[in-house]
Length: 295
Image (tube, rainbow, N blue to C red; front, top):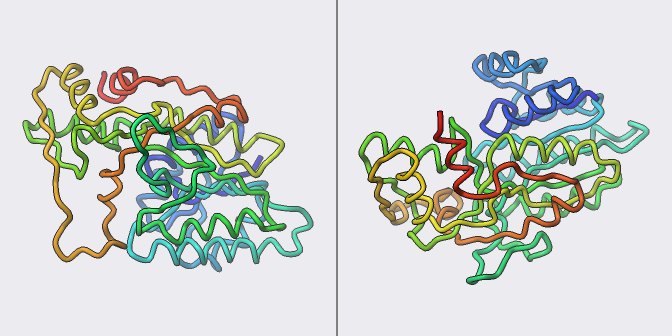
């Protein structure tokens, strides 16, 4: 299977690209810089130069592949429009292809609301997206009704790896003797997933015969941030403290990414397991912290 991947040099992307190559796929990775191109080549992917914001330069190449895995985002104020235009260009490029194109689209846990205590989010829960992600809900609805595409959507929890994510950031702060600053309180609940576990979910969903799935990618359904801090201290022998921060003055809601960390969310992980056969290796916060911060 030849797979076109956007965002392949990011934290999630590197894990997904590596897993797909391990599973026998040929990867064509979109790259807008020499650094990202070098990263993709090092993993084993072929590089196609281009920018997410100019999809007319790469959409035709993407639709010659067997599938597209969309992991890319600008993470700027223009993220919504850029994403929408990229998916529109991809749909347009599939016309005359002769068969629907498999598309694995990356949503996000921050499309969903905070959950009341002991209430688990399900994929069918109505979206209440964080402001920067508001257009993504519309894009997903449009994609799911497309006859040109066979779409599945994965909504990753907070992704953790040795090089990125909240647990890694906690470890860096702990070793530096600094507090871990975030919008969360000790009682805020975060769902988590280890990056290589998430990558295996992408691979399983991509190879599934029946597409049009909509699943959470979460290994740990939810853990209080205060408890996560305790686990980091236990792992590293440190005394990391949590410092809850306020919104930055003058920052518009559309630019306030950090607000997502203030969401308290607990998710139901059964659907991904049932429909894809995926089982996360790291299903407890203890196991995940050890994997990220251990040697």
